[in-house]
Length: 113
Length: 110
Image (cartoon, rainbow over all chains, first blue to last red; front, side, top):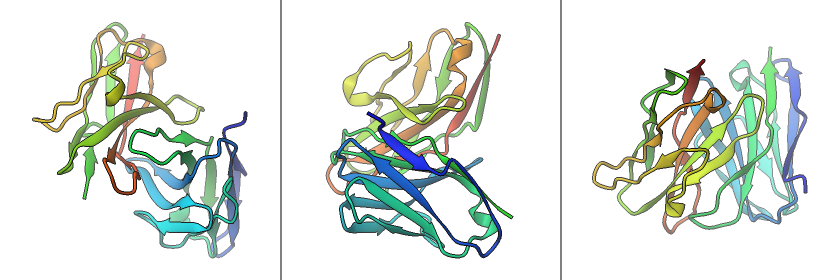
């Protein structure tokens, strides 16, 4: 049981390049999330999904797009990377419900030069 | 909208000292509160939630609705407690999307 798996673990991009981060979960969770973690800013929600085929904007969605074509996968895309998107990205998943805890991936460290 | 405030970015204590990581929230309804922890080079994981009223790794947290707080406490800190701690809130009803505080880095010196 792998839980939540993120790929890649590290990536360096040049300004203007594009990339996709993949998140996969094997817990049959309905909800999936993408967060970014920056020093002093904590965890900020980028986008989330409450089910296959649905996505919604979080707190800091600009510059990112997401897709949830399959229940177990949640993709985060950067169409034209900017240095401000240098961050550690975390994917998480959960069952729906107020008491449901989030299960996190190991994170992707992205540097945009 | 709900909000979670962790006023301390960094908390530094010596081994054996008591620890209190502060968490305050603003939400007009009845929230569910959580503490998550991230040890060095590990993924974020749930530490405890208020509904369980449990003690995990010696940590406890009491929901104080009057003061809108959910502080995390441990009577005697250990070096292995050094980590990043996040307080999170989920609304009862609605979309269940949690709101996180900015986190507190706890360093326990030997």
